[in-house]
Image (tube, rainbow, N blue to C red):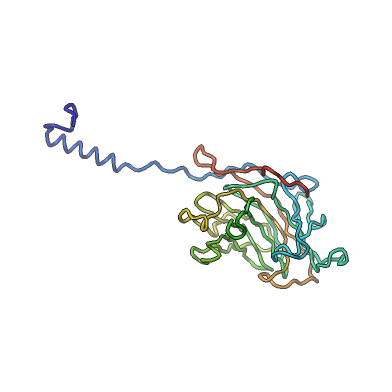
Length: 292
């Protein structure tokens, strides 16, 4: 040790003890507190224009009765997606023209696919859901790019509601959740006010996904380890809102009580910030599809 060191050499016992105490204090000093998550509003879609904002949304086209249950009745027909008095209205109807389209019922939905992506951040929507047998309205997110297919590339369900339930389901899907259900729980339920306006949100960070209904936390899903099988939610996702009807999960449809509507007052997009750092953000795809 250098001769000039005040704690070394022939220092007296009291000075040595003081130096030891200072060294102990230095090692025990608490680490800096990490910056808290802050959600800064960046964009509000309030549906105030006379028609659908096609810079942000397109109608979900459907596949003419094929594909997964949620898509089988989806149609791009213009009367199934309406902007009415500052509210987006998505409809499920009995099909009155079976010659043009043989399906018994048709449904409408919108998507930001090919127009607007989200990586981390908060999505919030004010929505009114009608009670209806066979109704399956949903707000959910899917990856912009999916080279490995579903469920490997992930899915975030902000809400799904069945029939006239007084609650919504809020869930994530991945390869891990598909093969290890309940480890940890992939979803939960949030109580709603049936027939009234409710605010649904998801807060998505690199470490956790948190769902809320009317401001109350209803479920969360945390990242464990670095396996993409367990956590595929580190890439841009797009948003879908749709009024689905029928399928194995929701059950049969009562066509005599149709139409049914899903009304959306607004959708808000928030940036995730930690201190002065922006985490993720919003983007336009490099090759946007604006054909619809």
